[in-house]
Length: 404
Image 1 (tube, rainbow, N blue to C red):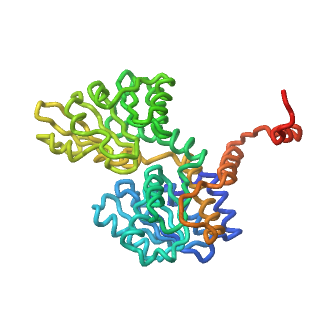
Image 2: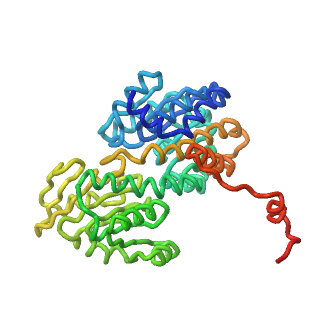
């Protein structure tokens, strides 16, 4: 299919890993259940894992991001796909159950819904699962809490926490694709407008940088004093949401927490304020509060844009139903970005296949050598060379006896 081929051409690292997997077959005989955004980039990852010998069942991690033509193409190629764009909540979870019906040895998750379902409703399968990978900040928060409570039944690799993913995916990918979604949905101009970014983690930094680069006046809201200080020293205006809500014109939530924008904020926003969520789940903007405040709702005033009219005549524009705006109103990260994330994912799966039986349940960092290898392969694909240490430099770095 053309869309998958287009993505693959922009993913040279993952393509090379797939070719290596085809030779080495590190996943022979393993069944993998995955819950990921069903996009062309994900298809390239699925093909790489299958080349390594795995049998795969794929469900969607967000029904509004599913590309039906990609799902159909993967199904035609022999990969079991349980996903369809726009399905309701019940069907979404039915698809996750269908992916789990494969009785997986390993799982891949994006937001922890599959792992959560496995631990709450499909405990009969837990004994067979020996490892997993999680792609998102939100999912890792949930997994760490599960482990703290003694509930996590197997080792999970926190793919989100690699240096390459935080830099390339979270910062540059989220920053670009978030505004891609906002632009497609609203055709708005950012220059001179006040953009409020809720959260200054790796994703929030990227969103703030892109907004600033397009001429917006950026306000950052935070609960973490260190992150707030970082934003302040980078030149951003830092305010609590209570004050930012009164001056903002475009709001982007990217925190991983719920109710970041609540009724008391909606009640004081300017007419025409745009509300977009770049966090994984649709809980960061309190959509129920927005619905209760509205006297009229105009669905689809533009693609993926709903207009809520309040009692005093003010209009608030909610994008993508409060879901992940970059994957609902746009196509998510560019394939070149996902090349890095999914390469780390693929190599982590191979590492898990080798090490899983020696690991206790818990959340594990991606081995440093995988992170370095992904960066090295990406530089090579870009035709970029870097320096190497001389023997004297190596000795200096590993000796405490040499002074100034």
